[in-house]
Each structure stands twice: as structure tokens, then as C-alpha cells.
Length: 159
Picture 1: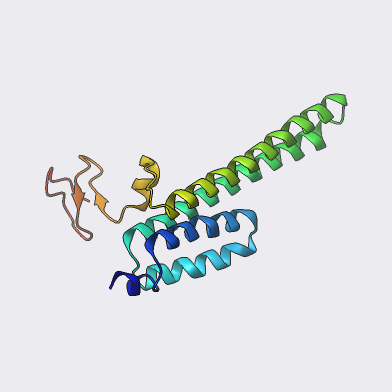
Picture 2: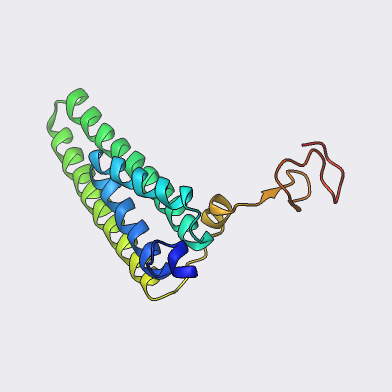
């Protein structure tokens, strides 16, 4: 029954695909469309929570990496266009190298996450786990709550 729930594919394969699709989305804006279509299918057909978590984490990482990459590019452009002196070529070169190293690091991270998912390993990063959690937590005490609850069952905080 589990295999039908996940399009007849193993959970590990879908999790690895989520990270590879997220990397593709980071690499090209056009690929976001494909990533979002597949993620929409995963959530529409209610795949297992590990698969949903992989898509959420992959989307977050791809968006964050893309934003950092754009900031590095903007910094490079800023230094190159504003400082038209000998120093600018040095700064341009340094920032360009940082951009290349960052791009390589992003590739390594996504490949490692996909490989780990393929072999059934779960990478626990607290920030990503919180992001991919389907539970609602009380902002006051952190207790897990049911969706649609108006008050925390533990501390009584109004939500």
C-alpha cells in the first residue's frame, strides 16, 4: 500500500529526486516550474511525510542558495561598476572566486543530500526539520498542537 501512495516508487527514491529537482531549480529559473509541478503532485496525492519534508527542505535550500548567489552577483556588479580603479579588478576576481566556490558547495550539498536520501539516511537539521514539520507549535511554550486550535492545551496561550 505504501508504494501506491508514493506513485509506486520507493520513498528513498522520491526523497533523492526531491533534492535533485531542487538543485535543478536552483540552477535555472525554468526548472522551478518542474519542481513545483512535481511537488504539487506529491502534496496533492498525499505522499509520505518524508517525501513531503524532502520537497520542503529542497525548496527552502534552493531558494536560499539562489538568493545568496544573487547577492554575491550583485556585490560583484556593484564593485565592478562603482570602483573603476585597479582595486576593482582584484575585488572582482575575489568575489568571482567566492561565487564559484559557493556554486561548487551548493552542488556538493545537494548531491550529498540526494545520496543520503537514496540510501535511507535522514539528515536532521533543526531549522529544516521545523520548516518541514506538519505540526503546529505553541509560540509560548513550544507544545505541539492540532491545526485549528484556538488555545494551547498546555499553557493556555491564545493562538
